[in-house]
Image (cartoon, rainbow, N blue to C red; front, side, top):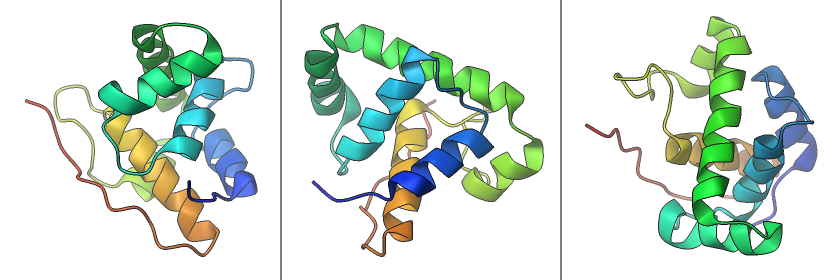
Length: 124
């Protein structure tokens, strides 16, 4: 597992509008720590669910909800600064996979490590 910069993750989550009391934010933190380019639905969500004592579907829903709430709170210029145009044109925000991958990449770059390669996919 690659090491991430926890201070950078805290700063990013706060800047992007996440709150600490949201269950999805806690699960997003775990996802960012564990992410190494693997598929979220087949590997990452089940791993988080095992730790959290819940189902992968609930993990995905909690993280998605946290992202939706934060996206609505975050100023447009901050969203543009961190995500650019990598948002889903249908919803106006990045997918959970794009969000986790970008957060992991930013936190690893802050730690001075080579970022994990990921595919930036937009769903139809």
